[in-house]
Length: 113
Image 1 (cartoon, rainbow, N blue to C red):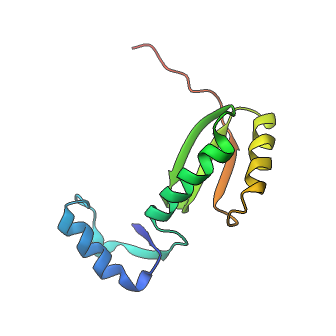
Image 2 (tube, rainbow, N blue to C red):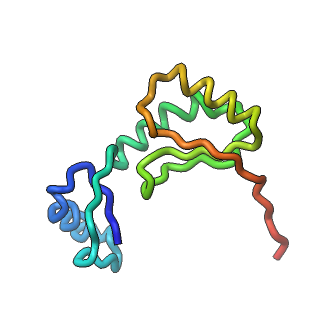
Image 3 (cartoon, rainbow, N blue to C red):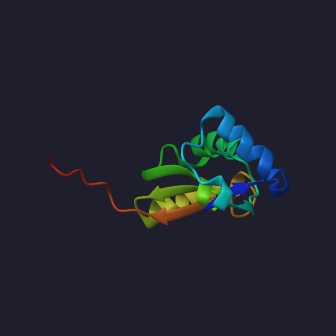
């Protein structure tokens, strides 16, 4: 089990805070390893709110996600044309390296029940 923290020296405090809020459910903190993350969730959320309207909205996107496990934003786009358009917009934003991952994504197909 892994937990990504900006400051891994505060693992005990972070785990205690989550447990006190009931946010942890049955997560086995005693087995968890704290890994170094560049951004905390609040920062990723702020980046998401900044990047999406400036680089992704208005394009042919398939999915938008704050990917906690990879400590980045991930955007699925429909085609190469959209990927190039989003990449061009991202370059104008002066955002940190490795903050955003773009990938081609097939359309979502809903199955009849």
